[in-house]
Length: 175
Image: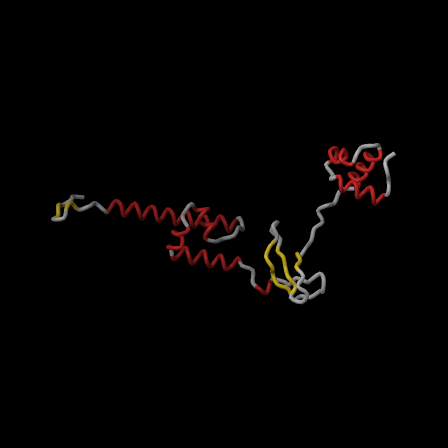
């Protein structure tokens, strides 16, 4: 291209910069489309944050692209569970189904609150303090052989208060 001198200065060669911008934009669109396909294949959540992270583009750029924005919003809406699919939780105290969500615990479990009796509860409880019978027997044998409760704790990894509870339940004392 031949540059001409104008009264305000030299004309700039904008053809190469606009073609580079178009290539860059097309590459970003292609990466975004591939990221959406990958997220759908892996059955992961599709939203602006996950798509931008997977594609390596900024969220603000995604919001400025009308076609991609509408596609992500449509896919995000498809992933939301409808209210008819969610079964109400039954209160363990009064057996009422008149419950509402009440935030989450620190471990991520959903908590609920009964509107009738105001009790807060978790849908499913899991007992984590279970020790196999062999571990319990081993701890009791060690204590019976004369080892202290803290010694049993050091040897087996079972808390000394748990060992004390087991001893009280069996009603034994060391020789």
